[in-house]
Amino acid sequence: MTDRRNAEEALRSANRELEIATRRMRRSLAAAARIQRSLLPTALPNLPGLQFAFGYHPCDELAGDALNVVKLDEDRIASTCST
Image (cartoon, rainbow, N blue to C red; front, side, top):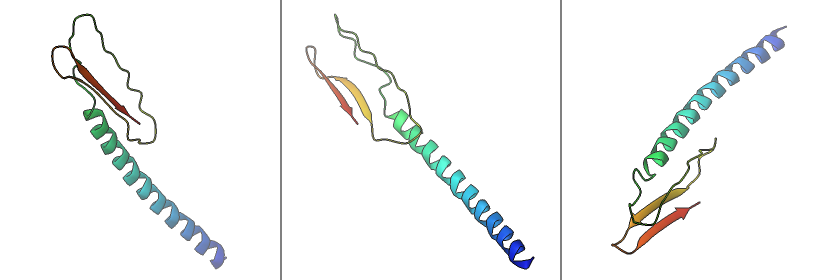
């Protein structure tokens, strides 16, 4: 019976450690997602005859995607998108 109790306690301990690690990972992913969202454009250039739009659909895992549209001068824009 002692072996079984030891195994049960070891399992409970492993589950506690796993729960702690999972909470830490979720906090880290949430912080990284906030940072990634903060890098998205808050406003797009207003140029006659052009319209810009984008959609943001986050996934469960973190990626290094980035997007920006920048007005360089009256006649030129730059768009960046990296994945």
